[in-house]
Length: 470
Image (cartoon, rainbow, N blue to C red; front, top):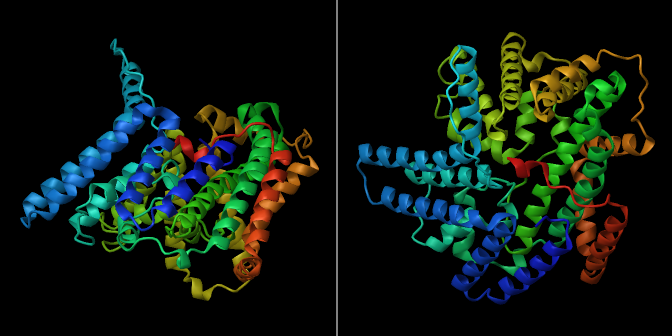
């Protein structure tokens, strides 16, 4: 069930009406949202609803077990067990085939080819997101940053809440669970902001991301050797816009839908392509993942507190893990390694020449350098194999052919997708305040008109969100 579909629209209308009807009955409202979330997830593959329930129950019981003891050694043992359970679920379903195939290829390279029958493991949609939420809950209880929940319903809803279940953002229990305790307040709902987020997300996904993908990025990356340098470069820029508009669209819609149901989520993107350094880029891109990696991997490894060499090692470990989180393939590991190398060189350069000594015009150089570094690294992210990635790099050197894919429509969408990043935040805030002052009937009519226009303008069919595969 995809967001930009009539099916989801009808589903959400029913859930919205029923949840607010049960506003005075918190327990009934929770179980309604749990049932809706499991139905939503079951529309992908009902067999994995049991996995979702099992992860929720394991984290619920583990949290209670942690809270029941003050013995440091026992608490560490419980923590390790919880990490093994959550990580084992993610590792088996997502990485079994990858690591097994890699091991068999290595053995074959040294002359041993064992006859091993591989299991066919189906990847549950959204598993990277809900297991990370489970891990964050377990670790936060261990650190005593939050108390273990006594309510199984609370944990089940936290793990399975449908707006962000399959592609994030990754929500912390410390942010979500207190909202269940105090209940929804209609006066605290910023409906206008929620509608604007949903409408903007629908436009970014169905128009910008889908058209750039089908008209430019997919054909070029499917066979980069058939295109010259101009088309390949345009496709690389197009891919940067497509992945941003696609993923930020899902996050915006998820945040807007959650807002209408009475839950407040922090933003997941902050105009990342206006960053003038890689460090700033990672503070603006997929914020929920970046902060998760920082708080649960980088800081426990020592962060930057144990000298430069250890800091660089920690950066590589975190980014390699982040690359592997995105996909079970060596191309994603390479993507993470490239970013780790870039962050390390950037950190070293900042030590040699502190940023306070840079003249103001270097911001533009930093912005262009950061954007192109991100784009080049994303060749590995988008390519299905190293061979295709190398073919992309080779085609960048062939400028004998003209830009056959540079239609005015596609180029205009790329410019629009990049232009979003340079709209001053105060303009967006002013537009939101102006929209909020409009009558509610006008706001609803605006949403209806946009849906009609999108149904006419959007390409046929609804492409899945890119991050569903992660």
